Image 1 (cartoon, rainbow, N blue to C red):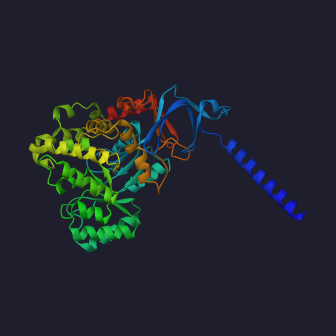
Image 2: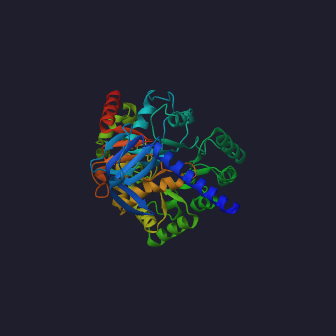
Length: 450
């Protein structure tokens, strides 16, 4: 009898706990509900469109995605956003972005940092991996996280490791430790390091549980960078040099070798095709000068970009071979995609004719021209980036528990990437920016830089 009573008591306790959880769930009504939406999501790498859905947001998190038939009895305190049969897609990540310093810097106006951050989110870019640290940039990251400034969620590389900042193995080691202790998220690799310096950096980074990413110094070479555990190869740096295909067409055998190495070491690749094509002189300067978004950056920045092609010596490579090199890059990107390599979306903004946020549209165009389907491009810009940062946060899908970062679009972006331009609104960590809010702020920025 005593055993029976204990069983009854245990059952009552379990039932009471379950009831309490239900009550708590009901009490935690969403702050915001986006209703009548078509939700674009992924199962693995397969895209799905879930029609007639409601997306619930509480604080900075998505708490539920449910059919409209089950979306009833929301309290009056819940803000309702009617998607009107529009499309919800996770916010994009800029995996090779640049973030201005939080204070006055060089010839940039004081407002420049906030304006560039806004341009990202105005185009649905809700996460940025900043790839070059500046003074006070960590404060900028903290201000955004605390809601003191508006901008994408930031993950920041510290000041660059390169041939000018590192002069010895000891200095490379010490600089890693300093950046770890200062709170930078990863280390930025630039050209100019010796192999010994790079290896010392890599070992200390591994011991410190820090990622290092970016370029491949020529004295290091692609295979050494992969062996040492570089987390991403940005701009596909070092690939064409490895097979001597900068100035001549790449062969199928060379493509196969590069794919094999990438897969063997499971390295991430951040292509930045549009920016690199511009840097090496493969683009038409007159077309670049017509980008309407140039009006949203300071005049000094515009003038510097417009003058780039008047100084050919500033090009990274031999411009006579730029078209061949860009074709090789496009073929390599397609080969990596076909082999299911780890590609993550990035544009290297703000850089030469690469305006924050707006640069995603040029990058998508280049990737499509390489033969990458739209659903794969969106996967690389959302889910793949979320997987990269899975130890830091959960984002990249329209799914319960993920950060409430997404775009609301009037048309299906799987039919055309044009649908991504001028979203009806952007949700950034649970804060809603309507089209009207965005247009008003863009007009202000444009007026400031005329």
